[in-house]
Every structure is written in structure tokens, then in C-alpha cells.
Image (cartoon, rainbow, N blue to C red):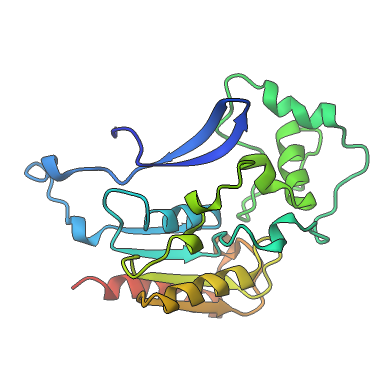
Length: 238
């Protein structure tokens, strides 16, 4: 459906082999006579890792998006948080390297998993499943970035290191009770945006943990606060 990607988010490396996600803002200039597209009004929105990928469409791509709405996306990867164990995540005893490393033997590499951080899980994690056990172990031990991007070349993937005056207008929404991606990371990003004169805004949602978007109730305080992000994007349409 699209040409080669303009940005690659590395999921993990196996020796010289990279397993990655391709992010591409389609180049549709040649198709506008068939299906008109207002290229000046293409926006990016995402939650959690999707928030990070949305921010990544603001730099290092041929045509940055016109605006970004980031909900609790990761950033500031050199922060000590990313190498700190999460006390809130408890792992069962007896997890072995032989179980965890089975994820590297799967062929083809799966594109779905059995654990959700967005509120859709039907029950507790199944630690007999290597993929669930591996993912949650990295999160709990503060080694998730070592697992997915061991090169630590943060300038390639960290939005906070790629903000300048040309960065797209950006709105951030983050729960102030987030333990998976703590709110201070977004506060730091927000300060960088302001320091560079980027049109931006941020709303802190009281009492909300990570991935609250999937569990919001229409009309609630949380619902109305997060709507400000969409209002922000709408305000950019002139």
C-alpha cells in the first residue's frame, strides 16, 4: 500500500538482524486528482507507544505532520526511570532464561501478543507464555530499552532530542498517577517544546494510570480533559 518507510522504529535486534516497525506518512501528491487529500491537515495521534510514534512523525521524515496529539507516550530515554525496576510490577518466582528466550525461536515472528497494557486484557498475564513473560520481565526490571534498542542512539528515536522551532504543534495528555511511563517524562518534553517556541499544550489528568484511554467513560472528568487534545488539533485547521 505504501513505498518504503521514512522512519523505522526498531523493536529488537538479533545480531545483525533487525525487527522493526515501519512508520510512513504516505506520499499521495500524485494521487490527489483521483482522491483529493489536504496534505496540510494531516495529524498524528496515539496512546503510549503510539504516542511516541506520533511524535516521531514530527522529525526525520520528508513531510512532518501538521499537528500531534500524544497521550502518555514515552520520551526522554536517557532518564534514570528507564533503567529503574518497577516496584508496582510483581513477577512470579521461577521465570527462567530458557523460557524467556523462547521468544527468539518463533518463526515467523508474531505480530500479535497475549498481553495488553491498554485495558483490553481478559484476565491476568499468562507467564507460561514466553512472549508475555518476556515483555513483562523487561518492563518490571527496567530493561525494556536494552531489549528493544541496545544501541542507545537516543538522538534517532527520542522526540525530546529532536525538537526545534520547526517541530509541529503538539498537545500532550498524561495521567498524574502513571507508573509505567511517569508524567515527569512528558513534563520534560513539554518544557523542551516551550523552550523552542513550538505551539503546544499539556493537560495532566488527576488519578489516572497508564493506558487510561481504553477505560474512559463518555462525559467523565477524564473524558472531557482528554478531549482538549482533539480540540487543539481542530484549532490548527485554518
